[in-house]
Image (cartoon, rainbow, N blue to C red; front, side, top):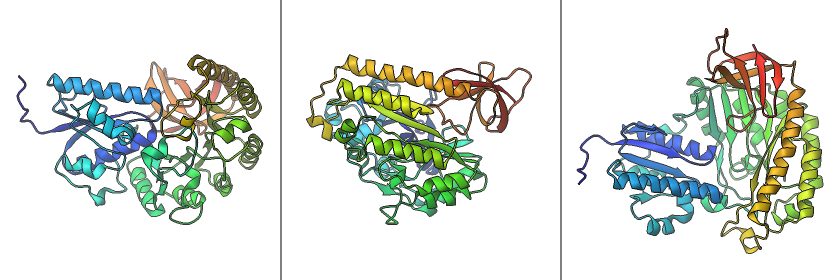
Amino acid sequence: MKTKSIKKDKVNIVTLGCSKNLVDSEEILTQLRGNGIKVTHEAKKDGANIVIINTCGFIDNAKQESIDTILRYVDAKENGEVDKVYVTGCLSQRYKDELEVEIPAVDAFFGTRDLPMLLKKFKVNYKQELVGERIITTANHYAYLKIAEGCDRPCSFCAIPLMRGKHVSKPIDEIIKEAKNLAKNGTKELLLIAQDLTYYGLDIYKKRNLADLLRNLSDVEGIEWIRLHYAFPAGFPMDVLDVMAERPNICNYLDMPLQHGSTRMLKLMRRGITREKTEDLIYKIREKVPGIALRTTLIAGHAGETEDDFEDMVDFVEQSRFERLGIFTYSHEEQTHAYGMDDNVPTEVKQERANIVMELQEQISFQKNQDKIGQHLKVLIDRKESGNYVGRTEFDSPEVDNEVLIEAKDTYLRIGDFVNVQITDATEFDLYGKV
């Protein structure tokens, strides 16, 4: 029989899902550590007796990974390896009642905005004085910076508003304070994230205020790159492009999930835009910011998608020639608008369609990378691995985009430094170069 540990509590935070979840975990980490509690993030073996699992509930695969992780730690609890298991995040927000019934061994479930309640389990309170100060879990030289929470968009397929609530912008002064603290601790690259960057400011400033925020952020000393993630195409604030063109430390990079290339499907998805308007926006973006890298995300097999719709999407990808592209297979999510439609595309057809798009994108990416051979590019060194230094250009975000490999033999580089690299070779998703 297990005896209760008399050691001081030590907490391990496990993060699943997207970069927005990672920022939430970093905030939990900061608050716990600020209250004198021993805490680690994603530790493999550290003797932690309490585990906090920050879950994802976006699509079926993510939900299953979250469930599997919870069950793994519940087993560890039953085997006496940990004392308590707490679950927070999107899955917990969306399915709290069901989870409490199905997995009663979990000590408590919390939603996406329940951090003060979670802290009370450790007999501590939320420290307002820690707002703007965040312990990051990424490499020191880059950090995600969340500028808003929630989403007001009515997209047919998306359950994010159910889990994250309505759009709430973070005030500019609070964001700048956080950016300055990050820069002071060695961060050189800020990756701006939100469910929808382009909606920033509408709730608190009564106007789309992303351009003003970018001007303020680009003035923060020590920040050399600012990268924009998750822009919505309908109502895109064009003044953002002016700031991007005039400020050298704002990367020529834009992550704008477009979801489809068929006007009929965009209407079914409730995206508020047509293919023609999307193509016009892409043209204007590339015209205002020459050389910009556009990253997008698409969905294959949404309820109601026909073969003709899919052919439209393939043609759209071929014509648009995105620098970066990812594609998901559609997940039929309860409580979303599309859940009332017939999920009529078989799973294997969804996957086949996604594969076709990615094969096309591989060809486009290969051609675009071949054009970079011989160019000199500014590269941020992320890590050393398998005899190579691995870095990124301003056109690449961590973990999802291309990398630059530099042979480490006879070369010494510091992680987190910028270096000028001549590109000597290229594959579909990697560049090779020398300093």
